[in-house]
View (cartoon, one colour):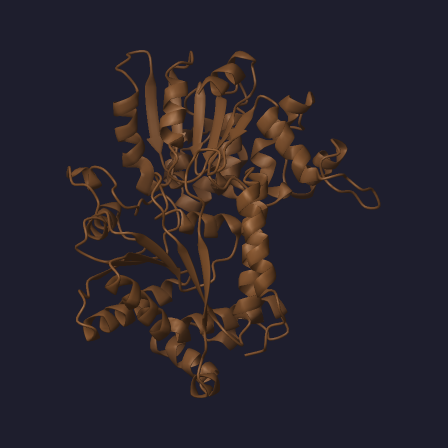
Amino acid sequence: MQAIQDAHAAQAPGFLLVSPTGSGKTAMTLTALRRLPVELILVITPLSMVPVWQLAIDHFVEADSRRRWVVTNPEKLVRLFEHSDLRLHDLPADEAARFAADCGVSRLPWDAVVLDESQMAADPESIRSRLLYRLTHPEAGAEPFFIPASATPFSTLGETAYTADLIAHAAGTVPPPTLVGAEYLDWLRGLHLAPDKGVAVADPTEKVKALLYRGGVGASASLEELGLPLQHREIHPIHLTAEERRHYEATWEEFRRRHGLALAEDLMSETDHAASALRRVQKASLLKAPYVARHVAALVKRGCQVIIPAWYLDNVDVLAETVADELHSRGLPDKVVAITGEAPGLRELKRAAFQTGRALVCVTNVVQGMNLQALEANVAGTGQTATSAPRVTVFADVLTGGKKMLQAEGRGQRDGQEAPAHYLVAEDTTEKQWLASALRAVAGTQELAHAPEDAAALYALADELDEEAVPA
């Protein structure tokens, strides 16, 4: 990308690349990097995407003895640090990570650092973000050129902290040495980019976007601008029976006991309204399983392959079993894969089973770094092409956070392949109100990612849902 080259030539500290899922951010980044005068390059990406980046580097970057690449995942960042007074690898993993985040020194002088799925740095106070800050702000030597890339970079102004250097460069000012929490918002207020008490700031989101995307330090493209299909979303209400309503509490508590999980009353206080609402959503998710199964079976009968994102890990197995039973009862292929936190090799085998049509349904709590779109080329390096069967994403749980929901939608809608999202909502529970709130978070993410068309559609959908929830 010429814009990344121009930013480097202008001595900008980096470049934010925002583009929808499956639109080719990896290729864009590598194409730009091979034209920059950089030799030692670090790529940080989710574990499942490490082999994808390794293959892409081999494909897009010509053999060049000058360049050295290191591709790693966030959980291994601590290995990139050392300390003069002790051996970090002799410490327990958590202690070593905290120590490195506070005072570790990078082992190598990076020329460029790429942060794939950069939303992982949205919390500036997390260990991961602090390690990243130390990598990109070494105590000695030049700072590396920093390229964060994501389809969902942030949902709120407070989550833009990892781009502070870029904002400062575009604004012609200098950021403070560290930026976390309230300090960062105070800094934005000083630049008139965030609202202050008693002081109106005209459209702060638009001002931040103007600096990032039109200030020479970033670029964003919406699906419409790229000529890709917009995400289609449908709300499908589920009407629980009176019997199910009466057994709502008992069913959930029995489920927790059977699986040896903490009971709801042990987890939270009933006076905690947000937690209470969340508990109702989770219980509704459990009760929805048979309805989800029937909805999914109808889609499979129409020739679709179905992706079911589930927020709660303990719901994944229940959904997979219930869907398989429903498929079997209808005489349909009942092979369902459940993808969670397995070793990468096993996860890839399951993914390949879905992509090649040996399984028609995938239930997963993985919302990033996994491709499930139709017609994917060279699935798992086997030379096979994924089936052309239309994908549909059926949301069994309400995922919280705009970034998480967009990432989940993007597992099937990639590379120009459409995958409608069906949101199954339990009527007369807190879930309808919760989903409306979640959709507004998605809209906020799309606003900051400069996707106004999708943001407007999401706000309209949330308005339809936004009514007082009936207590469960």
